[in-house]
Image 1 (spheres, helix red, strand yellow):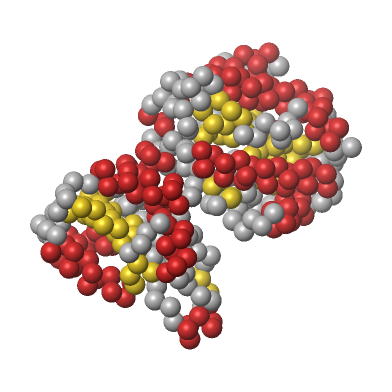
Image 2: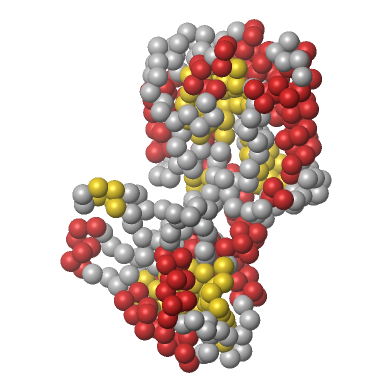
Length: 411
């Protein structure tokens, strides 16, 4: 990982001109209530640059006077505070993980940056200024506002699009992390399949998934698990997981472990009693063939948007054949989401893939679904695939999904 993050920092240095700098913030705690904070989530671009996941860290990259400089700012250790909240990352560990030799402390950050901006005549500072809503704020956005007020002659620029573009193409080390996340996710899915029964609550089934993750040393889920019985499976982002699972119901489980912060994202749908009804199997097989169809299409150079259009064309014919619809525009009644998204350090990973062609090294989900609320049938079958020049590699190929394999496994 150390060599990987070094290469990512070199990528940023190649963007910088002489007299320019870049800053990345790991982020801080967010207050939940009283004296409790929400669990800390490191800024993924900071992690991508350093391999560190600790709070209140700052990375400073500078190109000036024909040389480059990297400074990592850590929290200064406080023995009294550490008695209450544990140790902060130490200099030796930070150096070993990040490969950054120049370590300073955040209590001297302002003075250090002021000195660098002046002495090295920094004319532009790049910040990770991701902002999706007017209300969004972050340490980087706030620091950008501060710079504009105090140093109006310094150009404040956004590094987020450039880093996002790089993150769309996964290095081998990243794909290995995703494979590991998928492998652990498989164990959790199989445990749910083996233990589900009609009359259980969804959260009881979810507990089997959680147990397998903890056994594997996973402390980060990729996202909040969806364990949806019956009609709940027709709600795309259902997450209450608190309903009773009925006899003859399908259970849709959209789940993912994370490994080294890289996400797995797998959906399997299976019968609570271990046996599909004929109607369920008929609908299931339409979705399954859609899954195969799209995977067969994927390769470098294919327009991303064509995947979803091809699935809708396929659904139109299949749903007409079984009498569910009469016209193609009715497909949206039973399928209304996209077939795919990028996967990586975030479950819906960054990158402008919607605007162009697939590239080798992208990791995508393939997740066709059909949702027939009037019949309480919700089915989604999701795999994670890595795009290659000539096709794709299914990273979740060994997680069973044929209906007969599921029924035999659940015996």
